[in-house]
Length: 59
Image (cartoon, rainbow, N blue to C red):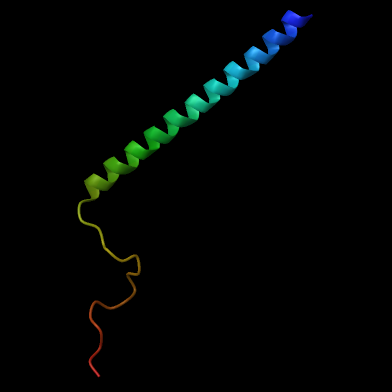
């Protein structure tokens, strides 16, 4: 009985490690994809607020 419990514990640990490794791979893949698309975009706007006018109005 002891060996069966030990086997279940080790199996659960291996599954947890595999899930963690899969998450890391997916995160790295997404990060690379984001970097690649950023390079393809070229120049981007500095400010996220695009509704503002480019220059301030004179008084």
